[in-house]
Length: 300
Image 1 (tube, helix red, strand yellow):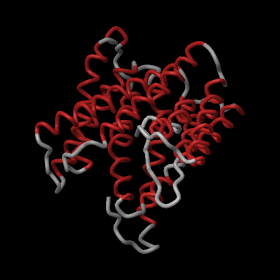
Image 2 (cartoon, helix red, strand yellow):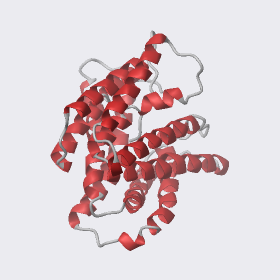
Image 3 (spheres, helix red, strand yellow):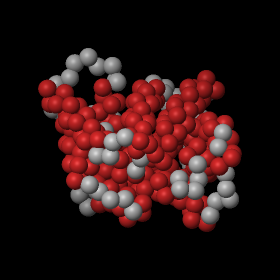
């Protein structure tokens, strides 16, 4: 993506946009955890992405760039949507239901390393290899903080989600449609929402009339986390160096812990905080390059 030239003063707005996106994304785990108290995980995914698809459809049809991918390219995009939205968020929601929002925040922070490991490269620099090992150690500290039972299973499901997200990154990078990111995201979200329908139907015995608070949480996840934050981040990315935009996303795990305490009422232990710091340090080392940064994003 070509970055537009801006003055130092002009950078304030795109920086603020990226930070706003990061803060919105960081809250998604805590909001999801609270919503899961009343809404089953697959049903939550179906509702979230159905609403997101509707909003994205309005944005796409109101925008200037309406270049649509060919029918064949749309099949590829839909497959990516089933992988990156249905499969990934099914695992994320199930993992958050069993574990905690703070665990999800810290484990998801390690996803760039999982993606890097599964990217197919056979050689890594000593710095990157050290970063990978450090990040793995950090995840181990987070998981062992509350071993056993459903909590451990939830953490393992979240780690499995990282493998699915890495596979999605590999698939999505082969998209040759030439369509804009918002159009691609729209078609992926449509496919992802459709993929959630049979999963949600398996939970029909757990369905309840959602309370007003649950409806607001679903709307927040759909409109803000899945649409608004995406638009804010891409606005900033067009006007900032990619390395600057990605570095600003480092606030996500830190802010995510704060949201876990404020919204989900979770307690932060010393091992979990230590593990989080180790994960962030490992990801920073793992993404190190001498000349240009490699950016491998996590799920949003």
